[in-house]
Image 1 (cartoon, one colour):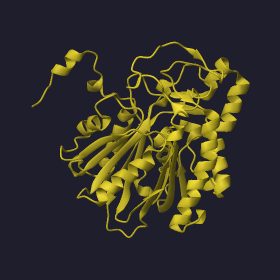
Image 2 (image 1 turned 120 degrees about the horizontal axis):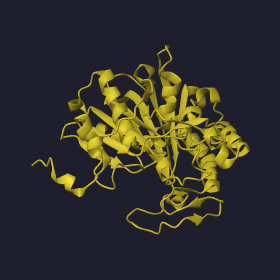
Image 3 (image 1 turned 90 degrees about the vertical axis):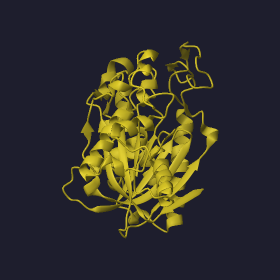
Image 4 (image 1 turned 30 degrees about the vertical axis):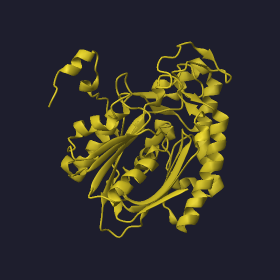
Length: 372
């Protein structure tokens, strides 16, 4: 168990953006049957999701979220010493999407810039990595941008995933502080034995060009090797056993109880799973912000999306003791606690813009605009 503590770093801003395209879950009544769709909505809590356009990415949404934080806080891009993009939905196979975001945001060339390839736990791991870098360096402000466009790899008739995933991009600002706040503390775990539980098998460097054949899968869904696969039973077992365990270990390590936290910002896997976790750890659902009904499972962005849903438009501003938890693909899980000033949680942004320069339709386009 990897444990980290940062006593001079705080969260200085939280923002997220979603596309304007709303997809109602009832849209699938004709495809899957009204009874099955209703059962899905009752179990997962997902009534609608947001879907990006063909060439829009979560980095487009994350850029808008990061820009919102910088503008609201009056922070110049030159003050940002590091930027991490944490996602399984990069703009390209290479280079890292963080470089594209650096260019778009105008972050200086002496900043540390890179990607982390993670999904549902990307927020937790990203904060730990940034915090570690900041604590041992002269970096005073840093940005983590996270999110996914998971539906782009879902098979078009996949009952297990098609209604589940929503799309969002979120940003969080970390900054050094002299304020007397509780330290940010985190615990990280992973189990590579579960690498097949949630996977897109084809298109990576293990097998760049596998067959495009559509397979009849044992769960009744049809998929190709380029589509997302979720081993539902294994994932469910992992979440309802391993996640409560790490939460209990975290509270034992920090000598805290559920009563010490005002809010539990958890990955929005589905409502049934969240209720099972809450029951096992004795967390009141009133303390657990939910965004599933409106945005679906937004992967690593979901804890921030849920905080925004709960606090951004609430006129009562305060500092909340928050326990963040992310878990999923890898399999990977982590927890961190932090005090969050709700003045720095900004309302949800709708945005459909695309970084047109990044859409490259011919290799010959790459010869233009070269710099020394």
